[in-house]
Structures are given as C-alpha cells and as structure tokens.
Length: 360
Image (cartoon, rainbow, N blue to C red):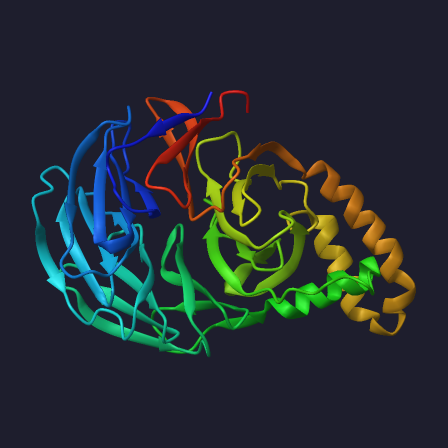
C-alpha cells in the first residue's frame, strides 16, 4: 500500500536522492529552493530554503553525509545531519540554470549539467572547475557516472544526443543520436501512420555493472545502450515504456541482478522492468546487430523478422510492476527503506509517494 510523506515542502517536489547506508537519509528539493531531509520512516529531519528564489533541481549525497543541491546556477553544500543553512555555496557552478548533479563513486568529482548544454566537472574537495565539456547543442538534462569507472561520465540532452566522456579529455569518446534508434525501430515495426515525438533525452542512468545505459526520452521509449571493452558502444535498442514522454529511468541496485529498471512518465505511470532478456543485453542481440550491419543490403527483407524476434524477447522484458500513479512524474528514486524495496515518487504536488516493491 502506498504511503504519503508530507509536511516537508510547500511547493511541488522536483528531485529526490538517497544517502548510502542502511540507515541513510532521503533528501528532496522543490520549487522556490526548498530542501527537506527525511528519515526512512518518512519523518522530516530538517528543511530549509536555499538562497534566492530559484527551484532546487537536483540533490545528491556524498558518502560523508554532505548533501549537494543545485538551484539556479549555484551548487550549495549542506550538512544533511544539521540542516540549518548552506555550509558552502559555489556560485556560477553552471553557466545557466543547472538541471542535474552527479557524484562519482570516489566522491572526487561532481558533474554539473545545465541549460547551456555544458557539463562542468568540479574537483572535490574545493569545487575547482577542472573540465568543461561542450558538445550538446541544446539543454543538457541529465548526467551519470559509470559505476566502477569514476572517470567515465554519460550525458544526455534535448538535442537527442547521448555521449560517453572520459574526464581526461574534453571531447566525447562517442556520441549517439537517439533519433537514429527511433527511426530504425519505427522502420522495423512498420508504423507509417504513427505520430512521431522526437526522442528528447530526459534522464540517463547506468546499471551497477557499468556497461548498460538507459535513457528515458520524450518519444515514450527507454533507449538502451551496451558499452563494451575500450568503452566502445557495442549495441543499442529501445522499448516502449510509456504512452507519453518518459521522464525518468533509474536502475535498481538492490535486487537479484543489476538489470531491474524503474521508469516514470508524463502519462502518470510508474513501471518496474526486468530488462535482463532484452536483445541489447544478450549475446544473441549482439550477433543480430553485427549481422544487420554486415548485410545492410538485405535490411528491408530481414527487418520484419528481426522486429518479430525483438518483440518476442521484449515480452520477457515487460513491466513486472505497473502503477497508475495518476499524475505526471517529476522524479523517481529507488530506495531501501528499513530494508524494504521501495520507489519514491515526486509529482506535481508537495508530497512524496512511497510504493513498496515487496512482491518483486
């Protein structure tokens, strides 16, 4: 049964994050710069209003219990155990309004994605800008570090591009245009009358293995990418997750394997998927991709058969949990709350909703 966490905010909640550890806190940020820290039972431990009137767009915990919160072009450092005010503020951390923060596993780098399309890398401690990554031609909406590879960063933006970066360089290791995947999927499935929504990239996430990426996009699909040796892009594909734009995608790291994926969309639905049998993740999918690339001349003849095989495989990768939340999803956050698998959902309201996943 869903639970409501209230009294932490007076404005719509935009972002949610959890701290590491069995007894870790939950943090949320909302419009007008409100930040709240919650216990795992849903009690408000502390809240404050950040300086200025800008929305709090992203929150991320460090292993040491510090909380980084973005508002406007500023990143504030907060003490999650004593939420009285900012310990430190870094003005101009973004060139324009910040959309997303990401911290690498060693807590040595904080990535800041903003409306200019740039990604700034701040060295920690000290918050010195050590890299500025400029390749997105529109808003950079999401960034995520690859687990086990603290110098590899994934970014995604409203230019429909997903990029993999090495922090030793200021150019991406590779770039993928999601529109290419979308057009290929539509061609295979032969839906000439379908209304087309461009796959603007809203949220990118990386599985715990570090090799599988997922990106929620405006076309309602979740686009999947597999990274191979040498950080090369080996395979890509997609599956339809929502009937309107998919706004959120997050891998869940506390189930039996690393390929459980939670998604949320503008259709008001929250879903949990087991994508372990999706063609992008399987050797058969890799072989099919190689074969397809090798024999492009026969693409049209094989397209229908490949689409049927892919459809059958994706049935096994279907939603294991599908929740009609009823409101547009702003943020989705998998969490272990007192040892219970859960999904924290932020929508257009000032209340967090907690859905248990005890049956998975």
